[in-house]
Image 1 (cartoon, rainbow, N blue to C red):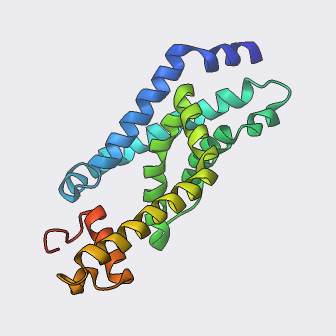
Image 2: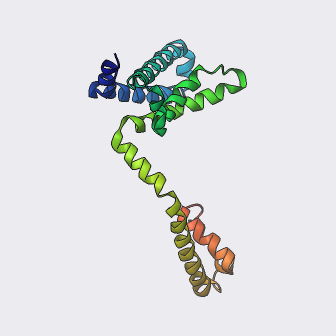
Image 3: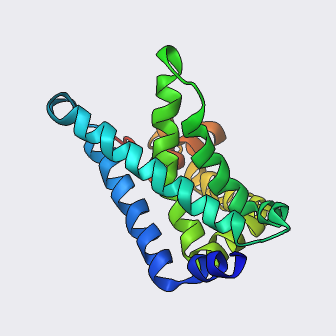
Length: 186
């Protein structure tokens, strides 16, 4: 039995089907942001969401059973834990004020596409490992911003004291230009 479930879990058609369901669930979540459509087709959306939850539950079950006599090995992968939590949250008795939490979790289902595509998993893993280095990139960018703020103050400070009169206003002006927020006024 374990061999059968292992074969199903590793089958490319099964994985493609799960990717399709994830994409369909994501599209359905996007469609549900239109109140008129929800008002008109709400019961159809609810039925489709139940089917999607059922498919995800069966998928998790198949993947756990594929580990045979050691189902706890399923939980050694952080991606499997993520899949399990996203699926399990739908079975929690949310209601009333917690209904918005359920909607947020439905949006998080989009991230299951990462678990379905190994190359995307590798890319996300590399990004997560590079987070500590992002601090150094931030420091380098701040140094550049600082240097150009001083240059801006020296070059434009007398002509435009409001935007380049001192270091702090120069920093703020350059930040506005970089983010394109209010740069036209400058």
